Amino acid sequence: MNFELADHQVAAQRLVREFAQAEVAPRIRELDRAQQFDRSILGKMGELGILGLCIPERYGGAGMDYISLGLACEELEYVDTSLRVIMSVHLGLNSLSVLSWGTEEQRRRFLLPQARGAKIAAYGLTEPAAGSDAVGIQATAVRDGRHYVLNGEKTWMSLADIADHFLVFAWTDAVKQKQRDHGGLSAFLVTREMKGVTTSTIHGKLGIRAGNTGSIVMDEVRVPEDHRLGQEGEGFHIAMFALDQGRYTVAAGATGLIRACLDSSTRYARERRAFGRPIGEHQLVKEMIARMARDYEVSRLLYLRAGWMKNQGMRNTRETSLAKWHATVASEQAAGDAVEVHGAYGYSDEYPVERFFRNAKGAVIYEGTREIHTLLQADYALGAREDKPTRVTLPKWPFNE
Image 1 (cartoon, helix red, strand yellow):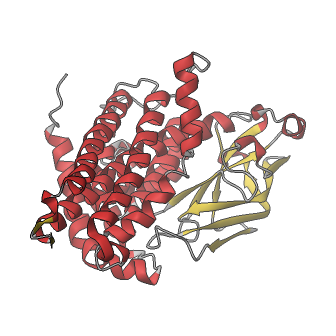
Image 2 (cartoon, rainbow, N blue to C red; image 1 turned 135 degrees about the horizontal axis):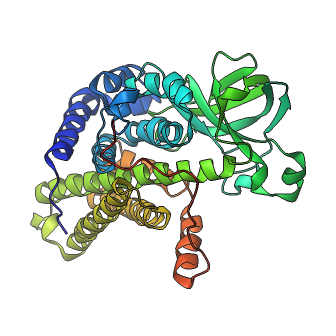
């Protein structure tokens, strides 16, 4: 096993690190305070090729591998979670689903502008009354000739008020909906200009305040049948496929947050003195810092393994779930410890650990709660769950151009 990064992976890591440090780090505290999303960030990410990092070049992307995607997400969340969320939603949940499940015409129509950053994409599965219980959604899509008429609401959607394209899920079979049979769910590519589409922003969030989160309401929206992603009844499989990619980016991002907590804590522990010596020489402070260092290394290895499996075209639902579960729980612990290390200063936004603490909480909820991943990993260990081959897989890297 070779743990050394390839030259192209190091280049991708450096590109994203320099962008985040130069363009966002100097003003992230002000953006967070103002609860303001800076749209100009998207344009810069598009110009640098970050928004299409692991999309094949023939569809407007940079053609990088999935490990490069993980490294990019680690660097983005090192600065702020809102940056990584862009990658999770636009690239992980939406674009990779279109790449894998879309027709050639859909890839040209939707993926090309998304990979270049000309269009921004979002993902809508969660509803006001349905989160972890995906078959509990109420949105419907009724066929009318060569169109579907969509009605329903999606909420807690990142980039809701920013996105141009939305990947949403709805019931196309009323009988299966009553039976809670996920074979009645289908996926659709909805665009903002469609009549009946309205979006709104959620205010007053605990964390990720520099990011945009909101809802989309679909009221009698007529969607052409060629905007259906996959076949009728494949929506649940597409949704779960998308979550495999989104969870991977969350795992890598949470790893970056752990590293940010560690770096901030070690700097402060060397400078702050108590009882006549730097607090980094006190045993209990060392314990917290050691835990961050341990969890960073373990989390990084877990997401790199999942990324390697994606590169090989291997099913990685179990491994990605484990990486997401471990890294997000560990990042919450690291952020809490970082506040403790900083003492009273950790309780204000004078230091970034206060923001890390608020941001970390979201990751143990979205993309599968810690409880969902706990049950998944127990079922895998007990032999009660087994990943079955699906009709569609993530394209193996390097891409065949």
